[in-house]
Length: 344
Image (tube, rainbow, N blue to C red):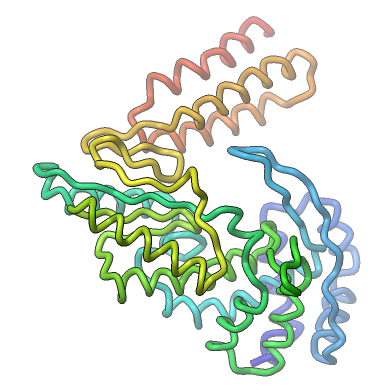
């Protein structure tokens, strides 16, 4: 398995996937200048077991909150792509159906449709009272325990050389050391998305098979459980929090866990879902307004291309079209159109 994955041919295809939408990046251009030599050398160090992971480049991203992103060197990203292509199918068949992040034929919009179906089913077509449990894990990526993650991976992967490489990638970065244990995986890695799914897959099976949560859905560490009984959801909440703490060494965010009627709106993935209408979250709209104000400042100074503004607008429309927010979206973006017209 190990020898096949890291042949020159497989690494070339992994390189093609890693460079997708990034061909103009400086690191990609430099790597392409001596592509055959670079891929040959990468294949050599992998086959001779002398591969070492490179240092990460760190930067801050501010969207809904401040996040520290760690970007691996481009040659290491090629290794990540080659690795994930071959080991992901082994874990995919072990994931539950209602886990929707970073999986083929899943994603945000399928998760949204599934949650709406859950809300409709648990309330019998919105004819009876139903409730939901919403919980979020505090600093999820920074709290993943390396030894626990490696143990979960080794239950499925039995090849010794693959496990050695996986340990190198897992231990290539960490955030904290608690009781001699390293914790945290970099948000920017492709492998981190797979590792994060593997880690919480234990919780998924516990919720579905031991607690019998029929209406359970997860998108990374964003979890919603729907039920007819509020009392039952309180029991489920205690069980899930205990399992996370004792088995996975994770803590639920104290301000992001609550139980409420579905009539009051279910917050999930930047939307708020009511029985017959979907709204955008207020915080999401505020971020968009701040972005538009920033564009209005940068455009007359020629510090941003209008093409980029239009791309941002298209992205926003693609996001907001899944809610009942057309008039609001049009109104807040009219500022850009009016400004451009005056500028022309």
